[in-house]
Amino acid sequence: MIYIYWSTLSFLFIYSRIHASEGSRFWFPNTLVYAEMKNEPFEIFAKSQMKKHCAILLKMFNVDSIDKFRSVILNDDAINNFRLGMMPSIRSIHIKQLIGLDKLATT
Image (cartoon, rainbow, N blue to C red; front, top):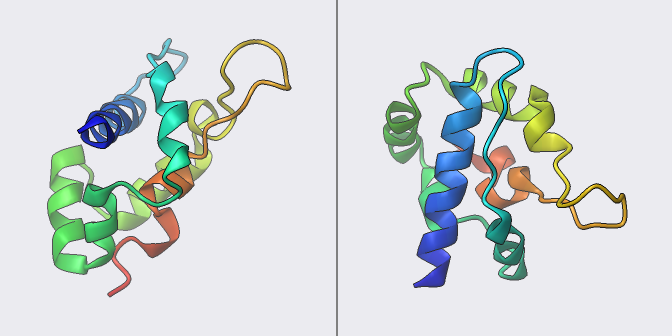
């Protein structure tokens, strides 16, 4: 049940980053750090390895193509450099791993 909660939070976080305006502040679900304990992509993203499921996912994110989705994820500083707290020793979140970015729409 808690894994569904984390999956929903990751979806909302990524959606908010895709549709953020330049220089806007962002919200981050701090409890998402615990999701990495499972060490596999969230189910909604894991199923999106199949192109037909990925097409549905892209509609949910209101994104035109998988390339645009990947570009946003790879180029968004808030996603790629996010750390909990101000100290470098605090753990970062690996969103690309939690959504299985390299495997989306590959089968």
